Length: 162
Ligand SMILES: [Zn+2]
Image (cartoon, rainbow, N blue to C red; front, top):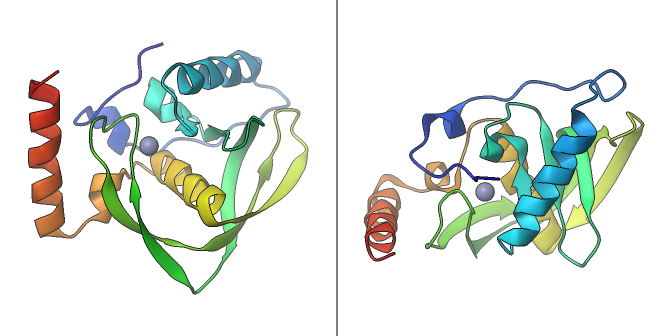
């Protein structure tokens, strides 16, 4: 499945909540998302990246697939860190993004059961990145104006040399 890339306007939309107990499309969606993520060597993917405006994320940082519906960050550390981040929707570049070092994320699993995920470091970064997608926010939106200009220039160069 095709992953939408910047500047596709769909990436800027807010995705809607899902109801796993009544949404028969959810399971196949999670499967498609996982396939797209693995095919592209990603560590996370949000449904809007496939053009599906549902609040669903998948991630895999250590060979275990996770999926959360309606994820919400209910706690985050005051401590933040800046690290380079890439995105399958902004291919070819990495940009420095500031994120909370640890988060507690609440949501539903694919069966509609409540789950709580405590995440730190890289996993916390991935979760925050994917939830951003559900709110129509991509890594370019996390940059200062100057950084954003430079990043878009680099992105366009990367696309042109493909
Ligand atoms: Zn992304």
